[in-house]
Image (cartoon, rainbow, N blue to C red; front, side):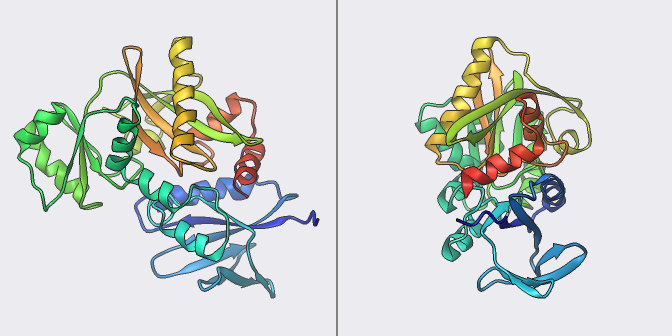
Length: 325
């Protein structure tokens, strides 16, 4: 068997407002990946162009077989480190493409990614499996609800967010019903399907999950204390929050969050790395969201959690790659 490094496409960019976050995640991978094991090429996916970057050179991707010509040779890939946040890398679209080509990726398959990118469908599945979730309602133009009908389900305050979106883009905390429809319109600019969700008073925490030698393993839990009204884009990416790892929870609640996160990874048939967000109300964790392509920049939560567990960035990237390839 050859021990030569595997060619890995670090696929980033995408079509959503999260493209800039995705590029930062790709830069972290390119900087820290173990080059004794992997030959990485950053591949940027845009609406008009797919191209690879390597040592200052660029080359167009042949979409028929996902190859590119760089440095006088044609490069094919043994695997894909998928780090597009949002469409088309987090919603199953590119997973279907790579499945057709027989190229493994570091995420779940088409079904897993399509499901988990749809917040309402994920909540329905997890609720049916007896996980605690927040009350929510989906709003779209074909089935309009009155503000009173919505608030009867969610109460006030509530959150309004795109059903298929991330990084808290176009997410609004609504305090009174007069703000509701402007918030819905803002979210609908990203996705025609909008989620209105109960506001839950409690401690916000998040837990990453990876595989280590085939064993689904929860990372240390992080507590999130936002300087803003909630953990919005500014809090996530512009330093307006305090992320405390390990979270300040009782031992029993801490272990329960880790147990639930591992179980979610298993029942949803995830691969690679995921991150599950919770609100702890009383002593009970409520699942808020499952992120199957979580942020992976130098400052992101999963690398922070891994560091607390004694796993450096190079080893973390290798674990994600090994569990997927």
